[in-house]
Image (cartoon, rainbow, N blue to C red; front, top):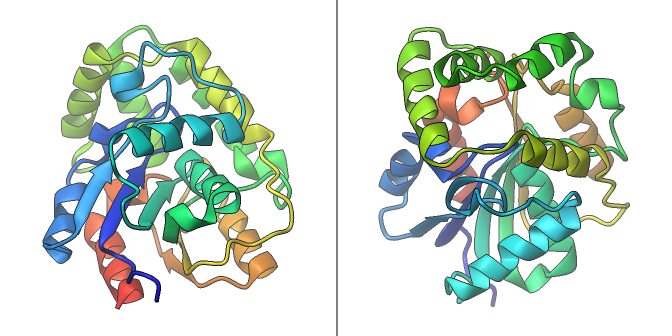
Length: 253
């Protein structure tokens, strides 16, 4: 009898982001699942692992994160993974390669090269601003530009950018590691096998970085449940963490 989902959570962030970028989403999820263990891990090259060189393939990133999970004792019971964007690709690869590790996964605004063209996976309208902001030397201005690219709420821009600038000052992600993660994401083609666990897709219809059509393509190809937020951007858990937690709660129940 498989363990019920929602008892052992693992949260994985996306490109150049770390555990601290989950913000208030993590305590909100814990409040909804008070008896659950909720853990976060950083991808190599980010967060506590910012001094490491990121692999340039999803398979290698996944293997590194899985080793970290094993070392931390997080695999004593099957994981319920929440993967945002690049974190969703890592979760998918993990489910394919090590199916006994994961009991369920919710994938937020993720994409796959085998299903969606490159100009949807990084929307062509974003190219000039995206690469310009990566080169911005001032941390606060860079993080403010990132917030305005990935989120659609404007009432907390300054507060969020200040918090994110502090994260970058303490645990800086190098430009080279960002490019290596981008290369890994750009090439990710997982094949035609679907993981044999409960899956949920969450998508922000206002995503200006990765087209919502990428989530639609995953839903259509594998006939997965998809919940769409009417206005949230790429960082859905920043724009509306309550909405995300509610749909995770409904899904688990």
